Length: 223
Image (tube, rainbow, N blue to C red; front, side, top):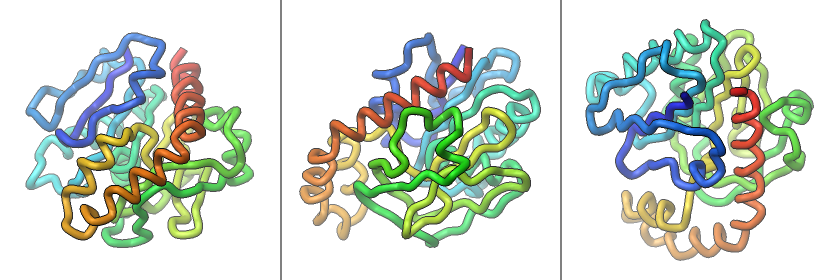
């Protein structure tokens, strides 16, 4: 079965589940639920969170999650890591995750690399596509990883390790209520909430098309 790991109560799967045409199980690691055993996982999606990839002391489940990710990659099972989930993939494979570098907030464009244009996950997606970004940390690329997408502010937007393990820096799951929830975390971003939502709303139709393509492509890789 496809499993989804939620790390933060305010970072749910959002619209991802609208496009999942296969059965899935949601594990609330943020609420202390036990992570699924490797043998029960056919594919794994790991969501974002306000914590950092190395906040194991404050969030002890992160150490177990990184080990599960390592085991999943070795087993060759499909993996999709979103924002923190992408950073956890990088950290699990020995790459650095750097705080307060290449920060981005809001609806922004990302550019596929030459490798990204031919990658299974990004089939049917324009070379330049619309994303929603909310990150202060960013990942370096693990050894052997292939860079798939970049932006002007953050050169590491997506990578693949092996045949079917992907890390994304951008968020393909957000909705307007999720954006307002995140904006409320900080007084500065709270002042920008209406502008962020309006900008997202103006691009939401094309954003959803991109999300649907990514999720459909990932599910195809799980078959």
